[in-house]
Image 1: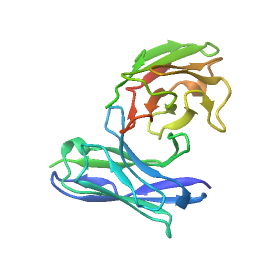
Image 2: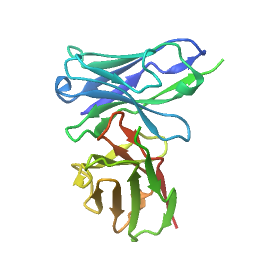
Image 3: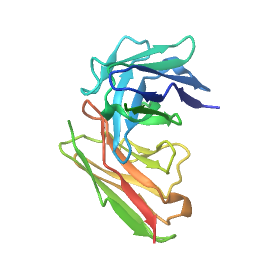
Image 4: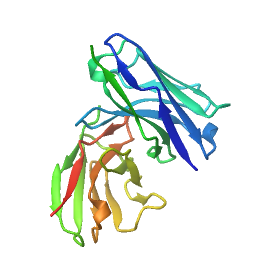
Length: 118
Length: 107
């Protein structure tokens, strides 16, 4: 089955760290760009970061640059998001997504919830 | 960043009706626009990409149009499973950005 499965979400205090993981299966993971997209309660979707097929290029939205790091392991078909210096405004459902040739996100995981609160 | 504005924010329609949702970009994005459907508690699902191309497996009652700054998603012959929230997304200019969503409710 073609799917993405996220893990690693949870409750963390402001200033803390969390590492999200995404396991891909059922498709040729190494040929796709991968992204993380988040959605805060009642808010619009927000693209967070993406990574090229071989990991040589990585891009971030301004609000997380310098705090978040995206990485991938093509041998194990996984992508991760290391989140440091977390803030309340980082609280959201985080989705792992596959980037299609049309620059759209054609496969989504079920999401993992991150809550930043004291 | 490019601002994506959808209208209306919510719309009511009956099963069998047709509905059109629009999305306006704050600057031209060529045809780099996608539409997604999201149901409560679920991840978004890609419907349309490159403004008018139907994603594999999506029913043909969904169609997209537009280019430049103005785009539309039309759903004909609404089915019960179509009542959900719809988002547009631009992918022309970094960073990719989304509209605020349009909630389609049953009348």
